[in-house]
Length: 139
Image (tube, rainbow, N blue to C red; front, side):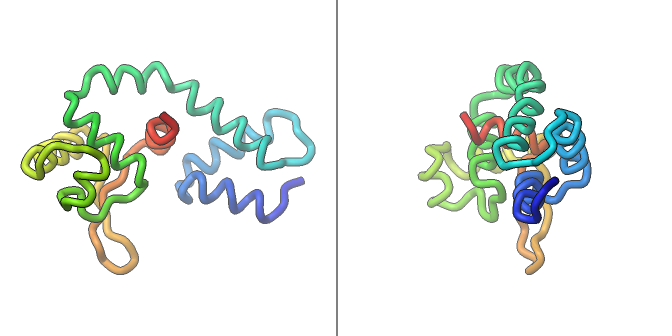
């Protein structure tokens, strides 16, 4: 059994991405629980993230500091509309906007982040791998 509120929590956590929703649901239903609770699905989500942790540590070690810092900042906010704004730079203690532009391009090229547009047509940046973003956000 799963309530509508719990299903919505899972969908929101997975940001509506089909792959992550299916993977999470498969894990949750595969654990044998007969009633799905928030604690149940969050425990399975954490297991999925921790399963990839060695890869995430490698990303951290391989990326230059400026790129890692920007990736952390984007992950922490989920979606970033203006990564070169003074407010964003100060909030995350990043280097100047020129360095951020270089890091953005490098992270886009490495497919660590992506650029898209919201429903209103505003450009934003987000972490490509949901699990990586969640892992960084919990650090």
